[in-house]
Amino acid sequence: PVPEFAAVFCREVQPSNTPLLQALARYIREQKQLDVQLDAFRLEQLPPHLLMNFRILDEHGRQLGMSRKFSQLHSELSSRVAPVAVAEVKEEQGKETTSQRYTSWSFGEFIDTHSVKRAGQTVVLFNALADKEDAVVVQAFDTRDAAQAAHQGGLRRLFMLLLKEQVKYLQKNLPDAQRLGMLFMIPNAPFTGTQQELQQQILETTFDRCCLSEPLPTNEAEFIARGKEAKSRLLLVAQEIARLVATILTEYQALQKALQQIKANVQVTQDICAQLEWLLNKRFIATTPFERLQHLPRYLKAINKRIDKLRANPSRDTQCMSQMQPLLQALQKLRQAQQGKADSRVDDFAWMLQELRVSLFAQELKTPVIVSVKRLEKMLAGIRS
Image (cartoon, rainbow, N blue to C red; front, side, top):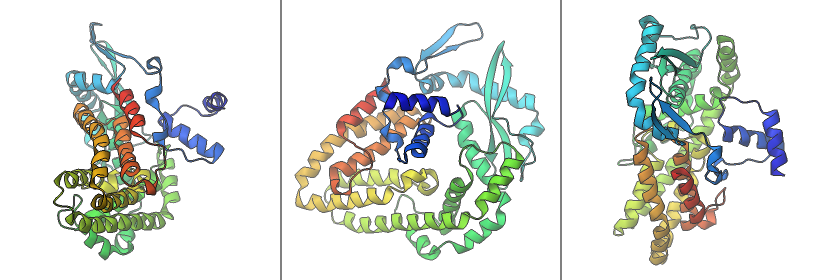
């Protein structure tokens, strides 16, 4: 029963920096041997009082804003506070600290927050290792999300410097590298790039999977131990990712031929091209979470099946598209409201739209979660509330 299971989870799983849904999904997998997708959780159905309510005060105690959407408050107010606070912490830490470059874990224990006093108030800033390609630096950010995003890249770079011999080996021994490189250079594809860029993305994803599992290392001993543990796995994981990328690119190549046959149907062609630009952006291998990346071949197969069915029954495609259109427009407005800032709920909504496309246009391919227009409308309402 859910209440009893939830009570045991709260008792046994200690609070950490791992997002609640990820921790819950992992616990369910450990206890019940069930893989639960994060999309299966319906946060929009929670009553509002279970969501944190934030009040932003100035140095005189006057309220500047209040909302249950922290991202909205941050978007509206951060430009008035964050740049000054970040500048102050850099000044306090000293120019040498913030500009010092590290090629190994020689900076002691990593502390993820730093506090400064500003107008009598304590301002908490978030530290990260930032990637500088041939080294990393310790840098302060005004939000945890921004720091975590930077820290992932910086920590990955430090592991790649630690395991540089393995990096060189992987660069020379990726399976079917020449064919992969040719597929990656398909003209006019949204991802088109060089073989070196493809190789770099596969390496990044490999190191993310082998080295960046939670909890992340916070001292040199943990860092070295994680590197030793990952060393023997790198080649197998890189081969797995390369095979998946080959499948994705092969599906895309087949899809390009099918698209040529429906060029006359401008509306459908534009919709599919917009979908492909989102799924297969310039750095889709490195930036798409691996659990999502595994579904890309199915999404591309679904587009192919949609094209096949379009020839036989164009009116059905029009009907399905009429159900999709309001949700696609809503997603576009959500992204505009984000103003470039990350919101995991909007990302989840966008991925659920991909599952809805499979459900509507290629139902025979099936979806890992139950999806419908009604469910997505509820999800949308939760994001907007």
